[in-house]
Amino acid sequence: MADLSNNSQNSAGARPPVKNKMTLSERFGSLGRAYFAFLRMDVCLMAIVNIMALFVNTFIMRAGGSVNHAMVYNMLSFGSQPLFMVLAVLVSRRVSPMVSQRIGFAGYAAFFIFVLILGEKAAIDFFWVPALLRSFGAGFYYVSYSFEVVEYTTDENRDAAGGIEGTINAIIALAFPILSGLLLSAFPEGNFTGYRILFGCLLGVVAAAFLFSLKLEPMQRTFDPDDRKSHLGESFKALLGEKIGRFMLSMTFFKGLRVGAMGFFIEILIFNAIRNETLVGINSTVGKIFAIIGALLYGLIVTPKRRAGSVAVGSGAIILVACILFFKLDWIPLMIFSAFNSGFGIFISEPELTLYFTTIETLDSLKGKAGEVHTANEFFLAAGEVLGIGMTLLFNLLFPGSNIASTCAIILLTGSQFFCAYFIGAIQKSLSSGAEAETTSVSEE
Image (cartoon, rainbow, N blue to C red; front, side, top):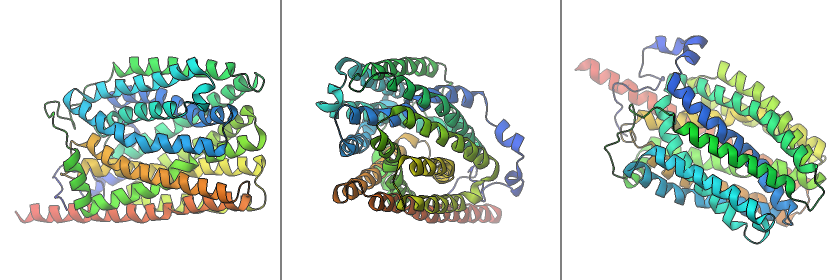
């Protein structure tokens, strides 16, 4: 295991105890102007990702595809994203992360332009093209994103930043899904004018994100612009060769099992039951109200020491609520479950994300390689996502329309997050032990 540096920002042991007693104003106030400039740009991506997650799948199904067709689209999209991230790392190192990010925006723009031109044919005959364009845009954007999160936040304020982002994401999703659903439902079945209008508006949001990216402050704290070497091989070796790295990759794989399918499965089940985009939007809006509450509570009560417990409690609560789906898999119980899933979901996702970035920032072998580590990590995330969707698809093929099969798939995917809770605890224990060992060594010297 790599030695920890003296300026490690892991709050488990590398800093004096007083740092664990930061007031709320200190936690949120320590997020500076550079972070909020980054947040402004990322808010645009939140809107794009939210709408795409909801209505690209309904677009595919409305154009003549089935639930299974939408699942194949998502498997292809998630599975190809790590490959594009390898290219993004090369661009980030040899040019800059900012350029990589703007190439990602171009990928999203190409997605919307392609769908605007071809309409429903893009979902029927050429669905693999939008899938690859989406993964291309996401791959290039999130490599840069990983560099920026480490640059613009620290371990002490990263949970607070996660609470802010979760809250804003939920607020954005309150209005956009229901308005989008009303727009799409205003046109008769078979008329894709509403989808063209929606995708045209999202193309404008991509342009705004591109302009905001031009205003970001240069990275100075964690990224060396003179380092033009790709560290992918080193990052894979460091992650697989160290216990903490293996724990983190395992955590990411199990995270992917849930993220891949649950990111869209409930919405397409609802849409398949009623074939109405407005109710899909209403469901998302109700869910985001619960997500706002969850994000606010998360930002207030979850600290680094509570991350593992947060995942365990969130997973257990979602599984209990999912049991109502055994009785009836209709849109009303699905919407009830979706609301609670959104509220407790941040208690699962945010600890995994914040600890992931803390590990990148803390370990000497990973410092300055956020993009490479994120790319290596993405292969394990994609493996989990593809497997999770594949398992759900298999349940659906073997037992089509069965509420018991769908509910078992949901419970199985959510239950996998208890493994994440275990690995979070193991990672933090290892980080704490390493920090204490280093402190003792320094004292003896």
